[in-house]
Image (cartoon, rainbow, N blue to C red; front, side, top):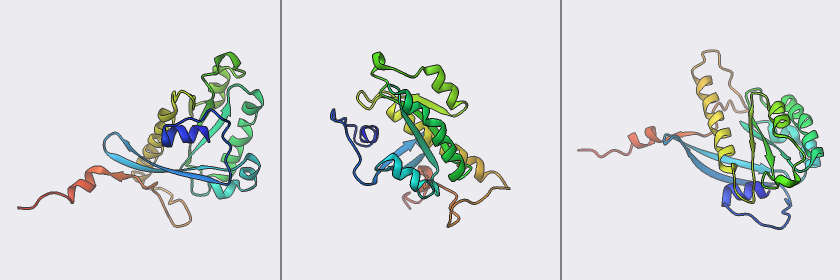
Length: 187
């Protein structure tokens, strides 16, 4: 919740913020001055509920952040479980990113960078701090950029598979240049 609050509102609360109910935030971002993405960011109220309803959260997801606390080894140890849940329940074309939080607490660090990066493999990995804001926007933007690139690849693939219950194949990315064409002045 602190991480999402930092990203969406650019605010940090020093008290321990806990989600009450499922929390969904929306943020529009611009990528490369050509695309606007509207992110719907879900923060399940707790880990147990997420585990119970994993399929519901992952069914139409285009991207996922798997988050662990750099100061708690047991948090990092659960990452493999959540990667497995993602593989079992999310669309095969989902883009995901591993995030180590509380990067500002260097003295309390319990997870080595090398271990986290090795677990992430070829996937995105960032160490972030909701308190300082370090790498928070970068992580969300790179995840969104990865989704955009995957969709471009799918659109150019003649063997593409339409995903989602309603045949949705895009994540609501709007081409700014296309929108501008219809707004030109006439003689």
